[in-house]
Image: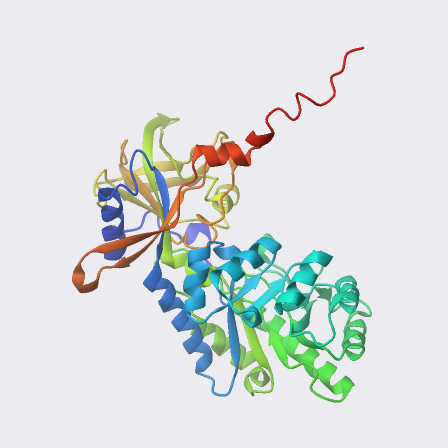
Length: 458
């Protein structure tokens, strides 16, 4: 089976590609990284375009199959990133009112937006139907709400998410098809299959089945097994109702990312090959397909740069204190074995550091002992004023900030190589959060609210 690497498979350090090296050096020269802006995220616009092209070509290799490729907005909930993906012809999968708003602002056509969430409110459903976006119901209770709220003749495609219960991968939190997963209707529970078939028979407008097995840590064969279960259920439902009521299958995303080196593996082509072998009927043209990839489209197209503020020795180990910690590498800090990252070392001018390797811990700015992004890495000796780069962080990391210690959100920049070899060109994607903005978010406008509440003396 295809597997994802563990932390033990990772090299201690990583030599940067020429593109990353040029980008870091230029970012330092232009002040995008420096003492006044000690951490920032960077996203390769042409790299994103290339990943989208690879996805589309992998599925286009099977003639006659209609596919709507949507991007999972949670992987990079930044309007300029979403607009780039819309410009590339992608649709958008959203899982909250906020993500839906961002998708609309980014310019995705309603018919290319899919709303998934296990806890949609009535207002969310009303908004979705008013816009005409597709909705995947998570459970029978939501289907009953949709019975009440769906307007007659609605343009919204409506599906039902099932949990094929095919098992989990190596990261439990990323596995969504376990026996007791919070997502979808459990297919293998007693009576579950029969209830699903009956739900479709009672609702001719219910025309899509949706399943998502998981993402990082899930081998391709496990993902394909979940898709196969979904396909077989669609065939059973259509047979039971005496026609092709189910016309599309939303097979989710979940292609795992290789964090061990620069190679993209598994590829989208690998995924399609496994699907064709496991579920050949999926590609015979009878069902339209929807995909929901996120991390696999962006992870390798972005990195985080952070300034080294101090270095010190503790217990015989060099500790390097930087501005990239749990606030932007949350999963890596709390689950380092599941989410290890490669680290690059750069000098104060943004040039790759050279020299004999030294074992060093790369720590972040958060005020708790566990805020270490990389433990015991062999890197050239880092010094105050140098920079570290966290590779493969284009998805989730700098776009989904954790506000621990009231640390402000970092700036994010898009970059591309200049035409004619004219160097790297940057554009702002998100400005660094100001302390004024942070204070406002913390309730500054209501500063006296509690001092004026209660406290009456008798």
